[in-house]
Image (tube, rainbow over all chains, first blue to last red; front, side):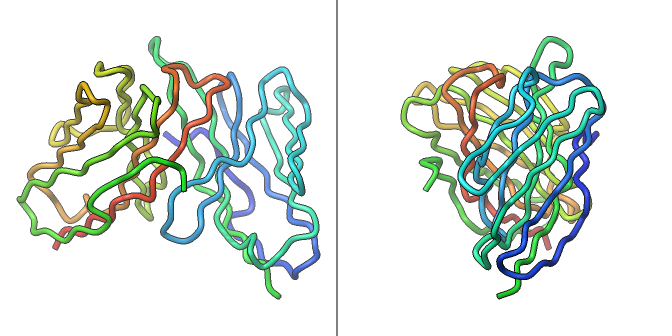
Length: 113
Length: 115
């Protein structure tokens, strides 16, 4: 089952605006990762935040993690048309002694020029 | 370019047939993962191999099987294909077997269309 659920499912903004995407999950995690996927292409790793971290930055990306609420957010500042893509959160979960990276259904971001 | 190579990029086949998808991981990566992405199911983890051995299993059907060879490339075999198997199949690789703190790198995927 999908453990990470992104919100909103789709987001349309103007270039220069900030985009915020949220992810909620159900079980305890070791870390949470955000990936980006251009239409029909492979997934590109953006950022990883460990369960003992609360915030992480990478360029125009800011990720927060609230383990008490089992949620994370991805903020893209000063968005560009090239940021148009789907964004997925993924959680590393241990089940039955093995680890699996479980993805949410993603947020489709459209940045209009 | 992630360094993960998948072939073929596109494949069209008929129901009931069998296909093999191939993956070459990044140089030095010992773990290979297979994922299926479809519109209705999203990204589903299928299976992971580490250094030739199965390490974790996800929602992989019995009609599907995979293996990782001594040179670390991997193949995903899909048999008795059904229309619902049409999807984008991703291979990914990572250096270690554990996911914690371990970035995994995805290939561009193999588009499978079953007609």
